[in-house]
Image 1 (cartoon, rainbow, N blue to C red):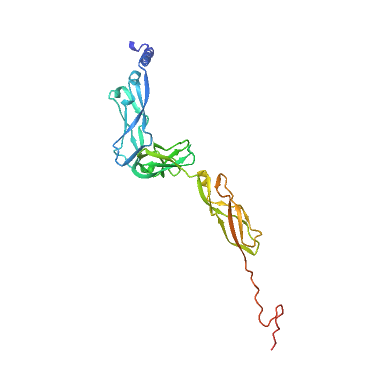
Image 2 (cartoon, one colour; image 1 turned 45 degrees about the horizontal axis):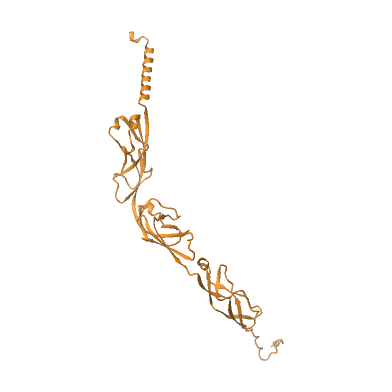
Length: 332
């Protein structure tokens, strides 16, 4: 039959024609792919449960097809969702459903990068926490005490039970550096775990509180007791049985921070090495560094010294001479 003549050449020509047609088609209507990131919508969320998408709250969706058609698509036309109707407490592996215009179905290929999502379902828990304020830095005004009061003084934390149970405190950090006067600001407290790290996956109600910062003038003086420092004691058998100091206290002046470190002021060392009777001494004070003693430079220390009683030897028995030997026993 004539059609079988030159069959190989005819097959080669047909294949070449098909390839040429595909090449021309690819040049005129190339196939491309575009990727969109689409938020995942949660459907049929159970009440009083907290939902967490372990694989992320967004999914990458690939749209593939003819260039002029793909270029007409937009991310807003794609809807990704996960149905929680049959989800159980704990970790669930649920399919990601895509919805897009019906005309795409025959002309474009639309596929999610992850066809399944890992979804954690946990009971929702709420707790109230007081707000703790941590002040750091030094205000520009000197000799003041900073006070910070949050309003309200507590917040309600809610979220997944495992996350809420991690919270150990709710704190506001405020830096006083350069502060020149009272201040009121709106700020967000931070939930912290037992290591001081923020716990982010919880909700605070209210999310912000008003922090009132006040600078209170501090007194620059302080009254402290005087403590005599007895360095060397009287020689034996003499001992100190009582002492007093006058005045019993003095007033110091200095910065509030330095005064807060001082609770008593000592005298200079007092030597009683050669004292065998009562004495009255004028002793200078040892002024701590960074403060000033107001009005008084010396104090009066009175010391009462007493000689200890010596033990007396026991008297000899009647009929014996001290130092003589006892008489020998008579033999019967």
